[in-house]
Length: 285
Image (cartoon, rainbow, N blue to C red; front, side, top):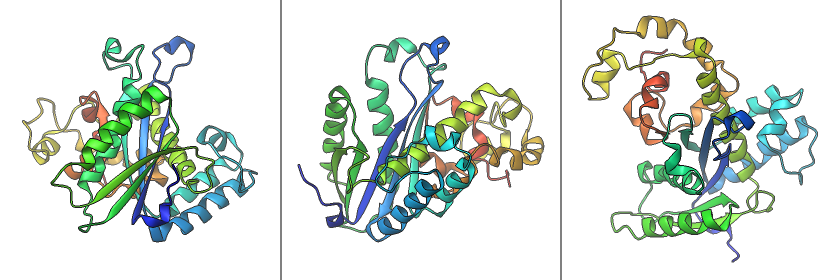
């Protein structure tokens, strides 16, 4: 089915990073993530130029496919990935911490991939679209056992009578000339996954293990039983945001800090929000 992205007001480019396996002793990733970049039609050309600049820095032709795994290892990787901060768009993501979930729920199925993509795309319901606007959701090609249930779930979402915008979903190869910005989604998603995996393996980089009472009140939940951690947290904020390449993409989230950021960053299991609360704490700066 041919689809012209120029006929839509927005295009959401979606890709995943990591694997859904649990053989950690055989190099299974500790996290699986999906990221969705929402781009206005008028910003597509600008973002394509940024993609070409990234490719040039790592020695790729404009027609070549670029992956986060390759860029991060290149000698010009840091410079190339720093260009992500010039992207025009809004980012959402879903991160599964595989060592923390019930593996029996996911092992041997493609449910993790489907849920991860679907939850990242739920951010569409948090955006303020003008009535009648249209969005094309372009997802990097997956296995049929993943594409079919995901496509069906998204089609049902589009039938929601409370939605004032429309959406259509296609699965496309990231080398498709009409959907090259899926490669940007790959770079963003790789950055997200690596950031959270770093915090899972480096205990010195943990910010909060639990919400402090002030943040708990902000989130309108019961106060934490632990003592406040804001003082030490604030002093380590600069270290947090220099972590790998995550600081390059932080500004792409529609809101930074506070409860509303949970509309754009989802975690499974949800208890991991406490451990990574540095993202939401308004006192971190």
